[in-house]
Image (tube, rainbow, N blue to C red; front, side, top):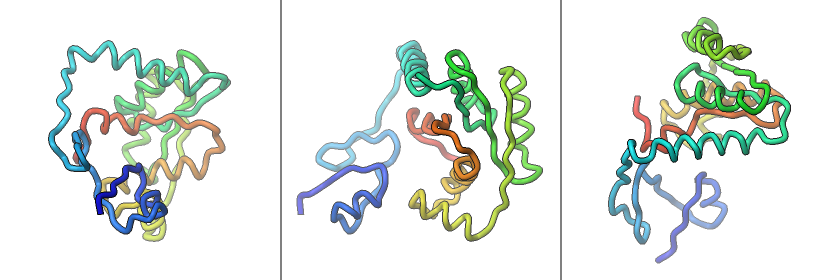
Length: 178
């Protein structure tokens, strides 16, 4: 019918009257709603720009706050966000996982290196929870749900106005595969 639209969530398209939609692969270049190529990033040329933009983005998000929490896996993305936030505001790292999971020890080690406090939040897995999170993020993709489960647990438990996360960095650099 010649109509097209973009949205970060499928439910926005459904509410706008679209009965079906397709996901756009990470790094795609579109013209007239058709994929015509893929983004090619030159890392050496963009390193300083990315550093400055990321620092400015974190500074903007914590402006006016006394304290901020960072959804923290101990990996490079969340560690970088936690480090940058700690330059501007009191920062607490928070990690969620199943009892005995490796995430807790990795996060603990990384938080210690960054000299930041760490709060651990345990959650129990159930079919109901998996289904609920899948509905919230509008997918049945196991990898996406596995990524979203700890973040969902953090958001339910914490009463923070702002929760920073390293999520999204993968998309900036053209996707993530497990």
